[in-house]
Image (cartoon, rainbow, N blue to C red; front, side, top):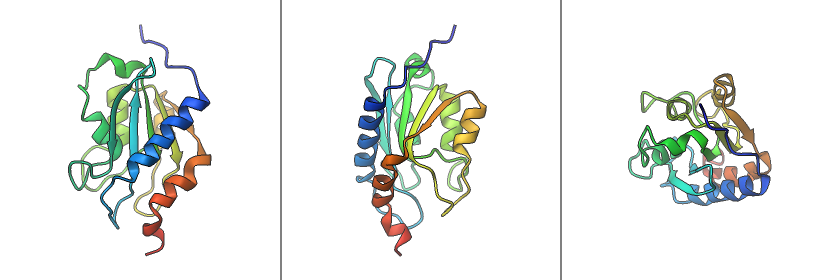
Length: 157
């Protein structure tokens, strides 16, 4: 039996997305990739892992960095939510698996993000792909300006 995903809690979602934006500020600057932060929160509200773009290697994505800190078969992932300041990618030039594919492989039932990925580097269908696989996806666009501000150098170059 698959555990039920956590109930929607707007206050918690906003708090964790703000944490993602703060994490994205740690990203080494790049003119070829977004600065993104990610937090994986367990069903009990505990932080399981965090990550940010380029955290340990030049091609790390935030969700990838956070997921790498957990065992792929960690049972807590079945009731977790992954928060990210940017919609999970579906196309990557630098790695064989997209963040969307990694999230699906991990079995995370819920994704909450702030900013839909612009087509600056690739066309992204993360939301649609995740929803088609049965994942609950919530976009909280009121925090999109904060996520975009961290990446302003990409649009003002």
